[in-house]
Amino acid sequence: MVWGLRLKIIYEQRHSLHRDPYGRHPEDPRRVEEGLAALRASEAWGYIDLVNPPEPDYSAALMVHDEEYVDRIKRESSLGFHYIDPDTYVNEYTFEIASIFATAAREAALSSIASGEPYFIMSRPGGHHAGRRGRAMGAPTLGFCIFDYTSIAAKALFDNGYRVMILDIDAHHGNGSQEILWLEPRALHIDIHQTGIYPGTGGIWSIGGGVARGTKINIPLERGSGDSVYSWILSHVIEPARKIYEPDFLIVFAGFDAHMEDPLTGLEVTEDTYAMFGSYVGRLLERGEIAGSLSILGGGYGEGAITSFVAYVEAMLGIREQPVIGEEEPSPGVVSAIPGIMDLLRDAATRIK
Image (cartoon, rainbow, N blue to C red; front, top):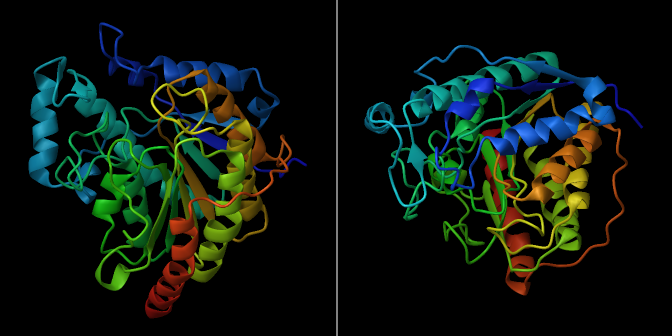
């Protein structure tokens, strides 16, 4: 069933200027171009508007990052192609491109809440590992990321009085976003990620601090976790948390690297999980249970990322049926912790109503 939604995809062809000239880095422009090419061949393309981002407002990054860090990225970028840590490269275009998508995240969030239309930003370089001052929560590197678009979008919304739910489905923990929003009760952050891989953060009892305690929910998964585990999480964690928190807006950090073919991770997810999440977003919008949504491109470095991206978009628009997936519990430690975390979330939600 097609919902009647139109998806705005923000695309900037200059993204390809941020690249490793030797073609050795997995965070490569082809990820975006191949994804869009596959989407153009899909029935979904008739329900999509491809739009240009606004020109960069260099203050957008300063909404969540320290000025010293932003200045450092600008300075490093001016030096041309080099690595600023063992994982993360910049070149002469990086600061400009990252600033474009930082601005786009802010403006897309505000446009979506005003119109009710879903948006998807085809952003790169990545974002969710970049903390306020760069490396976050003790991570060894920036993990390919420069500015945290997720936190920028969230801050634009809650600065305008809206409550935000962030669903990070990238296989790596969004340590930058979580660090920035750690004390912020107006952002419910649910992060599903593989344990034991970079950045090594996101334990089950990392739940936020101060008045935000309980608004950060981390679901670390064992290697080999697949569709049925994600289905359990949607039913037993994500949707109950949404009903408790009652957000106005949903941000999805749409990493497609949980797919079983991804070379950097060890999960066993198929396109069905991404279709499930896309359908979840579309249904919430169609029913008026959220006022807007923004998806932000995350990781995904194999062929499965392309098919998963298409499945996510098709299901969001109602072109692809929501798959029927059985449920399997994650680790006992996660299952046993959830009731207590939900109680803390309930307390936090009550305090900010």
